[in-house]
Amino acid sequence: MANCLEMEIKQKLSKLHCPFTWEIIDDFTRYSMACGNKYDQSLMIDKEINPLQQLLDLLLDCYKFISSGDDKKAAKKINKAEELLIKIQHEKEYNQIIRVIEHVFYATKCFFLYDANVIVEIQEILPNIVDTEQFNDIELGALYGCQSVIWMCMGDFGVVQAIDTAKKALEKNQDCALWHFIFAKSLRRQRRLISLSIDVSDLEKKHFEIAYATSTDDVFGIYYLQMRLESFYKFCRDRNYVMRKNENEKDVTKIAKQILQKKPKNFKVLLKLARIFLRVSSDESLLAKECLDTVETLVPDNITCFHYKAILYEGIGEYKEALYYYKKAAEHNNFAAELYYVQYGWEVGELEPLPHLLRMLKKYDPIVAEKKISLFLAIATTHYSLRKDMLNAADYFLKALSVDPLNTKFKVFKYSMIYEL
Image (cartoon, rainbow, N blue to C red):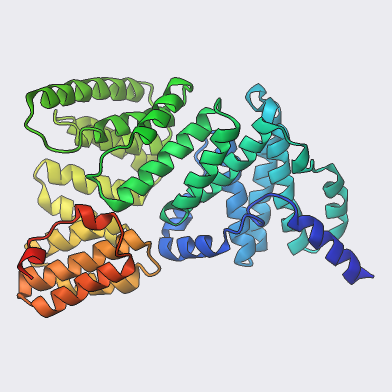
């Protein structure tokens, strides 16, 4: 009898919508393995981000701890999420989608209770969860939007699904700034996986602009400013281009300073502000340092902060400090920073590039295709440029091709060794 009841409940749970039914297990496992200790930093919920994003972050953390068998931490996350849900229920901006938010939360809670074998409480909750077939277009859009937030939390490993679900959310509801933001942010992540030098697409630009224009959220504003800078990333001598680039930089810097004057306590906003101040051609290093120093007080040992401090010190010519922070970021599995550490470490005689790059293959496994290609190409280039070893250089270039021969990354990676081979 008990088994029949359990099977019946299990069947009902399978029809609900939440992280446990969105088929994220494979990508989430790869993401968790790739992150290592970086995942612990993602568990720090930033109280100044969108409350819905906070809630979904907590639900994903609950999923993480249940999957790893840590029931106590899972219980803490679901309890925090429930407290946040009560606050959301009293906010007018969520009135149209509150049934969706409640559905996703209580579905997650039911899976938590099922894992804890608290069947009685599940039986009390299930009849009160609204069937998704009753949702209108705005609510269906929100359901897809919630999925896109979850996929976005998985970084490089969830980017394709984040784009797909955010697009579906916008097809159902064009009036939500958050869905525009997630769609644009995911497009940006996909673009940057291929290369920093790829042009910002019209689609990415359009949706960042809509998110910025329809929301007062500083996070949306920061990404909008970042997109504007990246729109002029390429070097060009054309006078009109240079003039437009300079005017754009002045405007971006002005808005960034206005945001900083509001004394934001969101460490993610501060990190993005620091990166903007480091990118512009005018010397804003003091403002960048101010942002990064504040981040250090809010979240000590933040990996991105280490990376940006390295960029800061490199920019002002303090190469010893730059190397120190590149190394710290590399020790915490920051892939981009580690590639720079290999370069600087070799220049000062601290390491041998080839053995280090080969170790990175194991260190970052599993890894998304674009980064694996980057690593194989770096190894190929090192074999050729430092050792004149054309055979191994060709071998690793072919390995890069075998990952994905049609990958756009090959259109933007140009090495002199290729032409000489």
